[in-house]
Amino acid sequence: MLVAAEAPMVGQGAGLAIDYQRLKSRQFAPIEQPVTAREAILYALGVGVGSDPDDGQSLKFVYENGLQTLPTYGTVLAYPGVWIAESDTGIDWRQALNGEYSVQFHRLPMIRGLAIGRLAIEEIIDKGPGRGALIYTRREVSDGDTGETICVVRQTTFCRADGGFGGPSGPIKPVREVPTTAPDLIVASDVPLQAHLIYRLSGDPNPLHVDPAVARSAGFDRPILHGGATYGFVGYALLKALCKGEPARLRQLDVRFSAPVYPGETIETSIWRLGDGRAAFRSQVRQRGAIALDNGYVEFQP
Picture 1: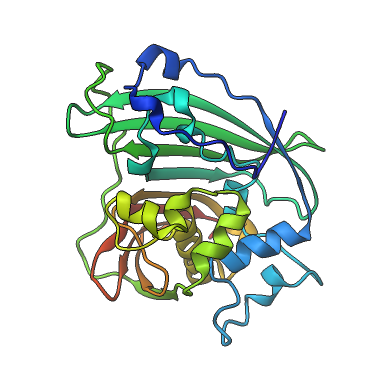
Picture 2: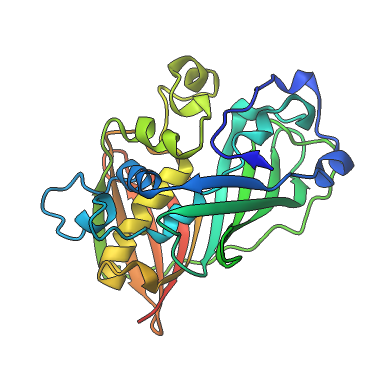
């Protein structure tokens, strides 16, 4: 088994195109990650917990005395790293972005123990030349000591430069609509300037989020916040707004990533209550008006 959080040897895609059958059948060894309270606290700090001195609910996620884990912490455990950057994938990894997350939370991550991650490619969609490709993956994160499932992460990776390889054009996963009425709640989350530097220590070493030269080569002015970090910031905001900060009440959290967030910006999340422990949401950047997360859906214990 592989050990989590090791940065892979990244290639240039070797000028190759995606080989549909080869990539679709790619096998991934299970990844093991020993975890301690340090990892749980580091993740919480990376998604902004503790940055607001008036947030009385934050201490339990960043202090080992009575420590609790965030449900979204499970998404980074036993993380497979930047596997799309390996030279045999045929993917131009510098042009790849998070497209969607759909996560079911079965139980809270452990504070200490062994996490195991198992990744599989479910489908690869060819949107056509100049339109990119979608890679659908499923990753199950489990407790290595008990065998219990912690969470199941279904992710869509948008490979902007890799369309036209001759793969299937569908089916494309449907998205959930957000109401057009005024939201019931709006929650703001300030992103610290160093958030990307902290979050990457939880297992995503993609240089797009730390190296200005790599960010510019991908068309960004400077390093952008990880999509998973934006997901964590908004997940914490929803936890406070809908679950009174009680992490075990969050059951499912789905988003579509629409635009990047830069460190130092503010994420404003509009929430529509749908009843029966369900809500829709959308998150936008206050400074630019750009929608960062769209078609958001959350389930929680009422």
